[in-house]
Amino acid sequence: MSFLKRFGYYLIGLSIGLLFLAFFLRKKAEGSGVEFCYLPNCRVLKDLRSKPLEVKPELQAIHDILAVQFLLKEGDVEFGSSEPRAEPCGIFVVNGDYGEMHVRLTLENCEGFTRLTGYESSRD
Image (cartoon, rainbow, N blue to C red; front, top):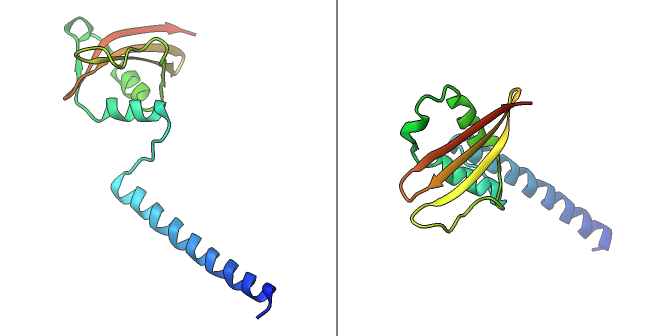
């Protein structure tokens, strides 16, 4: 069997395998809502979202709870300003743009819940 014939069989098998892999991964992600978070920013935001959100009593009057939820999905974690190893709860600073506003959140990442301890917003 010549090299070109073997190489052709290899490419056919590889393409069929890639099609099956793409099909199964798409079904898995759609059906179960699986997120593939490998980067630190994505992992921190996913961990913060996975726990119930508590709001400090002083911040109960926040009308932009949608901005908070949006930033927990699409925000940027400021690792330089955060203290992930603080005791008893790690402190994370998340900022981003929501509409025409720039929002900065300070969150405590505790074992069973996430607590919103700071909220600042400014118009762009």
